[in-house]
Image 1 (cartoon, rainbow, N blue to C red):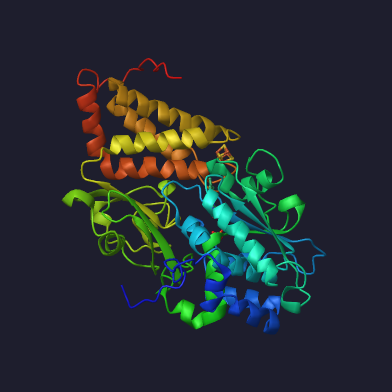
Image 2: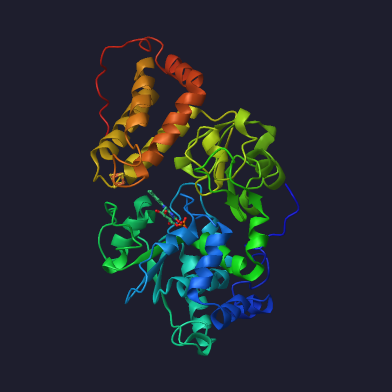
Length: 448
Ligand SMILES: Cc1cc2nc3c(=O)[nH]c(=O)nc-3n(C[C@H](O)[C@H](O)[C@H](O)COP(=O)(O)O)c2cc1C
Ligand code: SF4
């Protein structure tokens, strides 16, 4: 890893980092003062676009480009939705930012709302984050008192209200249009797109949805400049016109079978193995890694042979995964059965499917039933072919489903089968020595 100065996590270990006085003592809100005094909203959008910042919430969409889709000269209101739902399994870095340094998050929100001309920002906060709620509420109060929020911010004609909306505790609430439905008071059923939120979003008005960490990055781009941001990370692959590069710092999570789980900041492009060894102090109990989920469950699995994969937006794709996702890795040690991983994964997605799309609703439930049957000692080798077929067909994006949940459900299945088929076959032989080679239909399990 090249020399690197953390910025997103620079405050988190300071005593009382969540208080305004501590944030300001470290230069906090200095960027806001400078930007609202000297830059137009269009200039800010241009800077963010030039930085090639890509969203940290999972999809890696270029942030400045998303902002540029907002209709010009719209009479308003325009809304900013801050995606703090953090529902992807294994993911917890937004929580660290909100609990430890809520003013950094707020400064990012205020700057981004200024750029997009949003008059209200809604923080859609994961229900299970009570300390984040407390810290954000207190920070909003302090910022308002200090003139950074509310009417006529810092004496300018720019005004912004920030509201917190507690999430409805489902994975699909983090999908941007499910989130919008939820704020509007309905069940978080994702909407068919187009129209995209930038054109018709919250309350049918132009809306930008961005992740907490994405917005925190905006503070540092505007503070330190585009050249600084682009000096960190990985440029686009020259022979891949679809790769927009992976610039800037990233908060990586590490959990599972590591000695030192936690949230660590590093340049995009650090290898998965270095992340585990340098920050996580290696796999626990002196074991080897069998597999790593690189960026939240929906990204699938890297095998031990693939630990040199760079943790940038393109690296996990080259290694056969969905992508970098949230950058929060989960390590499975050499003793952990892949069948258990597959079962847990299928159980999660079947539970979280909202049920609107047939391939997702039926496919996730069917995959779970197959895993349950294998674990109950009635699996057949052909069940792995069935699972592969489900993985290949439940969520082909874009096209067959309304949102990306089904596609995400497919990657753990596809990668487990592609990379650990021998182990899965052995599990079936062991659990069903009499019937593993059968091909004729097997009675369904009587599960609730
Ligand atoms: C099922 C599902 C769950 C999602 N959950 C989250 C989430 O918890 N947090 C998040 O930021 N993005 C989540 N996303 C991605 C959002 O739809 C959206 O792309 C993101 O908030 C945009 O922000 P960004 O461009 O700053 O990354 C999810 C997507 C899907 C399909
Ligand atoms: S893909 Fe699944 S979660 Fe997404 S809208 Fe369709 S049924 Fe709901």
